Image (cartoon, rainbow, N blue to C red; front, side):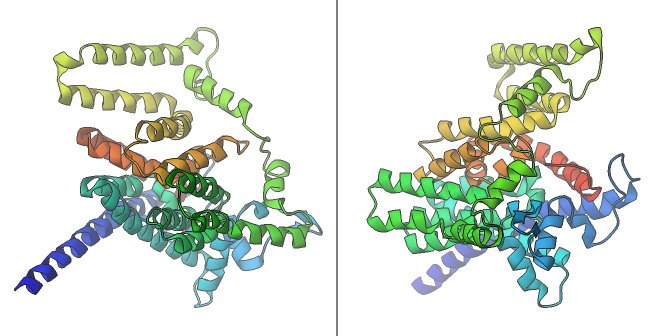
Length: 426
């Protein structure tokens, strides 16, 4: 009898999260498919884009072409001069090439790898957060990671799904003090994307904070093996062990260190809207006026929050934030992804595992020092600490959580259509 009760309890513990995770993955991926294969092919070609066609081609655009070319032909280069695609790390295209061995095209292989890896990430994240912060937080963190509009890049031929899987697996293994596993996953993560290097200071700081044994410190440096192997390849092939960084400055026009000009431009776009509104003279005041009006309304909501009540205040604020996004657009998303991420991690530093906070700050610091502001929101999405932290925060404020999921739904479909039309997303 006791054995039967234990078996039943184990079944509930296993199947309930399984159905939740798979359900969230299917629903969010279903929205993407509706946008890419259901809506986009019905629309005419937009300015600067193409008319989407039914088929695997909708999953391949922008950086996808670089990964597919590496997988099918290898890295570009003339003599010792590296080509532009050397900036893209080798594990994802190598995996594509392996899967192509069973007869699949690069597009199909890349799409399947990324989607399955993203599903694996959701499993790891759910069980990790359930152990550290409880079931409620685990569900919200999983939903946020899957429903975030940038999760589109966990479905198309990009590295987001694979990198999130490897970095999350490495972090949770280190958090459980499984240092050998953490080193193995970390090594693969640093062979997938340069931001995997943030694992090294995160592990070192956590080892010091916890007064961990020497094996924890060895794990930190073991995670660097992936990037060291790629660096060795670049040294042999191009006589430059840092060719993947060099080409970002010579061929991708990234500045060195903090991109002051890029951030200044985003600040101007947020406050004046000059990139969106091309008015002259008095017309230039429209955007700042609307921004000021939103600020005044926000102050009014805060001042009368007790009179409005918690429910009306929360949803009014959500509506106001939606209007703010309509007014500012991508510059706001880029800024909030990074600066908002910094505040989020600091605010939750006592509620999250130390390694989560250390990795989040290290990865954000790496982005700030990367010399560019392009795709900051997508790269920030690849930092699992941010989705994890936002999930924990929203688990305590479900009204904000539902509004966030609703906003994410609109953006997820919109981004999917734009990507299928080969318009810039992130």
